[in-house]
Amino acid sequence: MTLTIDEMAAFCKRKGFVYPSSELYGGLAGLYDYGPYGTELKNNIKSLWWNYHVQSREDIVGIDGSIISHQGIWKASGHLDAFSDPMAICTKCKHKDRIDTLIEEKTNLPTDGLSMKELNELVKEHKIVCPHCKGAFQELQDFNLMFPVQVGADTSSKGTAYLRGETAQLIFTNFKLVAENSRLKLPFGIAQMGKAFRNEISPRNFLFRLREFEQMDIEYFIHPKQKCPFLKEVENCTLQVYTAEDQEKKKKPTFLTVQKILSKKIMTDWHAYWLAYEHEWFTKLNVNPKNLRVRQHLKKEKSHYALDTWDLEYNFPFGWKEVEGIANRTDYDLKAHSKHSKKDLSIFDEQTKEKIIPHVVAEPSLGVDRSFLIFLLDAFHDDKKRGNILLKLHPRLAPVKAAIFPLVSNKEELTKKARTVYTILKDSVPCTYDKGGSIGRRYARQDELGTPYCITIDFDSLKDDTVTIRERDSTDQKRIKISELKPFILDKLS
Ligand SMILES: [Zn+2]
Image 1 (cartoon, helix red, strand yellow):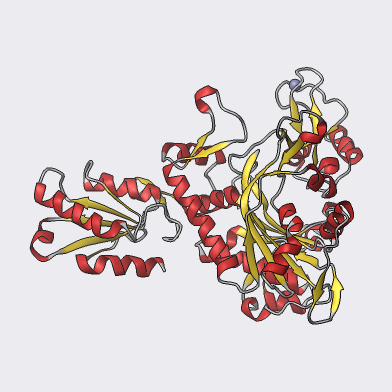
Image 2: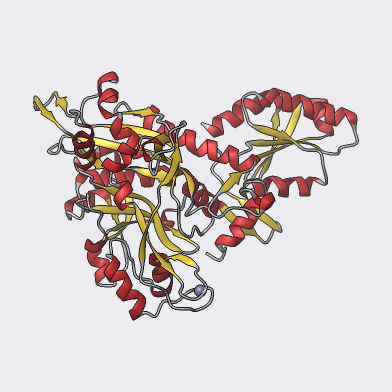
């Protein structure tokens, strides 16, 4: 991929997808605002995710928890004690940076799960210095990533609450109520979409690492002995698999079907199912499967709660990076909340007739902003022949579905007819009316926004009520009756 992340950020600003936040006042790192087209794309991503993961499934329901949340939640979850990044401070210019990222950039070694001591050793061994002044770093420190907020008039530490560091914890604290209200039987999932906050030391790579971001999260609960009943749905799905063993032996990843993965016992049935299910969500929305892989965590990368973790990764301009992690969190979180709140969070399992605390077998959790970046990167084509950027976004993701043009702007009969077509479509098809500039210029403008259909009203339209419809990727054009336009486009979007 030749496009850099900075070029993508510049493109997003120029076309009205994403702006650096607070830029009028000099900006704030790690915060972005979505512009008119970015907002539409983002909303489409969210509604497609919700439909695929919640509405079309019998076993998953949704919640929408509050953003400001009780300190007790974050004490129990371990966030207040251990949700931190290793910070390096320059001895000369006092610049503060995230050391694991600096090490990864310099050495290409994964640093997840390394202790402070190991990181300190790596800094010395690889002579990692301040990126600004080349000064040496002080001994590393932990930096907590939670954002405290003061709630109400109580200014003591009792009044301190936190912006949620992840959406997951609100699922655990509501777990028992949701399980009862929705009369779900194991296995089942609870989903949530919404903002989360991390006070990153040095946010970077545009939408990849943010201080304020949005998550699309599922916690999937099972009886620990339960097998995955959905394997049939994904058994023919092919994944690019990178096992810990392959990584250690410096081998390349291999393409395997889920059936093969299971027969070779590379991962558990639940891991295979969720990785394939998530992989499909991206590929069904036009992401190239070559840019996706599933990578097993090396032993030292594993989180304190996880038995085995696999990441779905994407080939970003700055390397293969995590899109989402599929970890078995066991009963760690529900047990922790049960202990700290002194409330019983166990439920009755119909099948085994036991009262149990279910296990979270997988946590298919995606960043909305990260997904947004992936869809744009994958759709982005610098089309030299056309002389403009072409965004090959899936029609369902495209911010604008159709653009309506009068052939020329100075003939009233044409503009009037074009406005009529626009009025017919606008209630059911997000569309735009554009009469500015040459037709070629107007096509280029829509190509750059990823608009799948351009509709031109010409002099023949006045006689026979037909228009020209141009398809974005092939540039094929055909005549179609105005009365057939709406069903034609809606059919392509379904
Ligand atoms: Zn420095």
